[in-house]
Length: 219
View 1 (cartoon, one colour):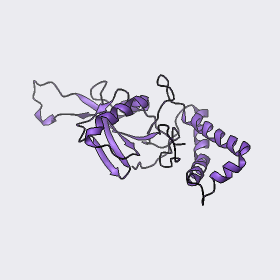
View 2 (spheres, rainbow, N blue to C red):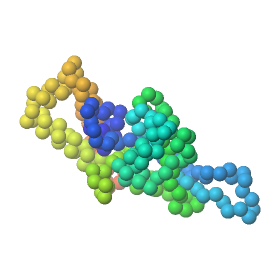
View 3 (cartoon, rainbow, N blue to C red):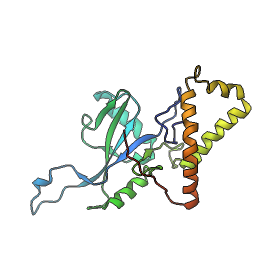
View 4 (cartoon, one colour):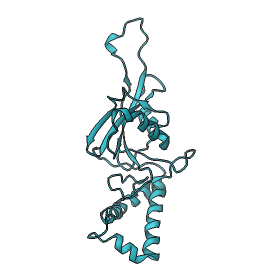
């Protein structure tokens, strides 16, 4: 369920497909050496665009981080050309048990980029989703193709629910039994969120432009 819909906080047990993950983009460029060391004749340091990816997994040990990143990057088109910001020791940070972040970077396409240019750069990798500053890194079903749009993803999800409810009503009722089903809370949450999300995404589709709401982003 959390694959593309922006519901990583409510995963279904037994899910094996790559989930969407939170993507927090910096608003300004960064440099990797001390600007105070510049001299009149020195070449200015390279500028980078930075972002953190927050993953609902146990943080890999230091010796496993290189292998984890090599496995993670190809699954998400938005970060295929990213690299760590800093060392393998410094770029990873545990947020809480079962959730950590890893900081990535890209060489800036040009110097002195404006905030709008930086936002546009990240829009091609992890577009804003419903709220300003809210971004999700979404996997592709096929490595050569972009992920489906959020509206199409929600349509597929709700269509699947409707087919299960229509043709397997007993199983659907059992899945929604909060006292017995381990998936009941996640399913109810998804259905409640859909009532808010679908009108919003349909409006965006009709207007053919993002309609973003204000919200403070949290981990």
